[in-house]
Image (cartoon, rainbow over all chains, first blue to last red; front, side, top):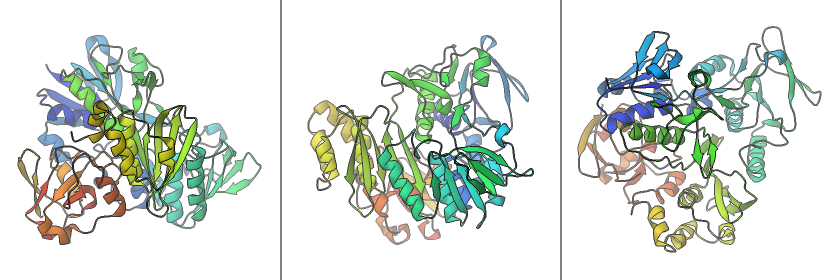
Length: 419
Length: 106
């Protein structure tokens, strides 16, 4: 037998399966998903799909025919109940299955509002799956009063789409500002102003004490004693990795399923990739929730199953669309101590460069793709530009890149990309 | 359905029947054309679906956007006058027989 079983048919699972075939793996590939539909993209759920501008079919990562052509067996609507590592077997809702290699790409689940404070009322939604958005859409209509709980990217994207759809939107954030966990005060201020321009009311340092209503949410009682009339609530307060299966199987855990640089878990023959896996990065252990990471991590695992013995080198990046603004983020801003603001080349374009000591850590670029693309390369190559040059809008950002590209031969290779 | 001919950097060609309501990137991914990564799945955020389009079809390929143009300046493979992000180009019936070259690196 030569069989890879992949549990979790999201972006990571799908990417692992396709990459195995692309690398010439000739054995069986079985991709198991608990949702009834083929692997689909999640980022458009809080954007085009919520707006009704795209269909569920258009969200499919690949058409069903491609899995057939690639001899990837899709088992959809199938729940994995137990992993038995010593027998190299899993038990599922449709029977048991032996494996040579098992890939866990089981993702993360949205945190929900406690039922004790009204989290189980009707019209209180999370936003993670197609099924979630299909529940939201019928009540997502112009004039409805929407309360968004949580000022992270998902909450802000949902608020933007709602405002564009004519809903009356209030967003509450418990911390003293939106984007507290993920971005600097400058980026938060940019998006606060953008949302205010479009009529979204943002309440910071404000918590929801409880929701009430007769079966369906009708009111939200806030920590400042305001009572909001509300027709629907979207809860965007983060996710947690789905570790139940891994825990029971005895895998080492810590902020998700722990893997080494090759994507191996603590048990022989079991790998993990994507949102559910915590991996070594720059001397610490992190978890990333993004599509590019899901693809790259899963593809590295696929290569290593094929014997490549290739370490995973993450180059974190993210994007978000809100109103007419495209935000692109390169790098991870953890432990920054300084933010340098750079005006972009066209109206409204701006980027925020995070430095930690003498090192460029990350950049948020708003409608400023040039700055984003340059920053991404600089960060990937471990090169820090002079903050004074960064702040000087008169210096063409392309020159920043070129100046550093010729400064060190070794670095030039990574920077130039095409060399 | 228009047929689009994808040519990889090493010269391998592949003919793809592209559906209406698709982008060139989606048509390529659906057919498993190698060399197009499309990390952002069409959000014009990553520049990993860069392709070179046959200039004879420029009229139906359409105008380049500002954001797209800025990203192509720093794409992994060299930008030329025929460069576009294939996610930003819609399939049109008039594209039947059009050649799209896939660069070596994304």
